[in-house]
Image (cartoon, rainbow, N blue to C red):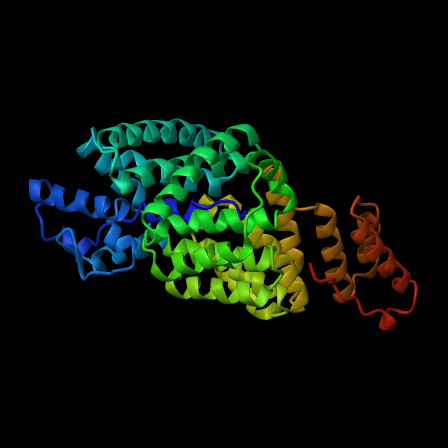
Length: 421
């Protein structure tokens, strides 16, 4: 799970579609209909200080808050109409910076979950740079507008996350300096601008307990971070933000797991998101893996199978690959050994089609060996354990060797138990 993608879900929030029931009240090509559609998007992106500060008025710019929340709900449930809505906005308002910002966020999300699509990556780079230039132009014309400042910093952070994903540390460093400086100043001037607290909270948490993959960026930034401040900021964003409210819960789940090692707390945060957005395949796949890590193998297997059965999954191989791995281990733990055997083959096929898939296939050999032994296919199990024992992973090699030693005894005395991974 990539925990530095601070604005992945921000991008997703920015691509929500207006409620069809509201749009149906307008003639498709009427000026009023177009004004209504663009107003929804403007509201979503450029939130007032009062709304960001948690004042939560019933209405904002002549629209009810519930209408904004409806758009957010659609996006987090991965509504397939998002791309078409963005294109409609771009065509209707070619001079506006708003469609470009939404487009950049959506394209980041798409390239991230398509994972191996080079065209999608190149398109994000091009469109995000265009969106950034338009946001800067708007800020130049409205230098005192805090939302304009936030928009520039937001696009820069999208780019930071993209660069970190692909280990491009130098451009990530420069974009980070610029965007975080803006966020800090906004927070100092407008303490109740809660959406700024998500990136600031993440920054403090991850720089105070920096995981190995972020050490190059931490070295460049020379910022240690403060853990307590980071957690407090994120909790405040989760409770009082709007644009970043769901994001805060998502990344709190990541922090609880990766930096604190509290799998139960991480699971509880993710379960709330799944309950709110059952159509979000990423949330559901992550919850399944967290359940598995807590020993709830049958629950994890059931949820993973549901995710695998969703017809949208093929569009998002980044989610698909990790769900396969969860299903592989949870089915073994649940003693659903035929499912384990089928999944092992599927994982190999997936890895063959997606170069760089981050799963050691020798562990797949090990899991299939465990399932083979349980099914009474002893010779096949021994062959696969031997393959696993030759892998470069020391833990795997030692575990496979232990299985082989037990296999030399009478079959009834061998009770393989997979390690918790």
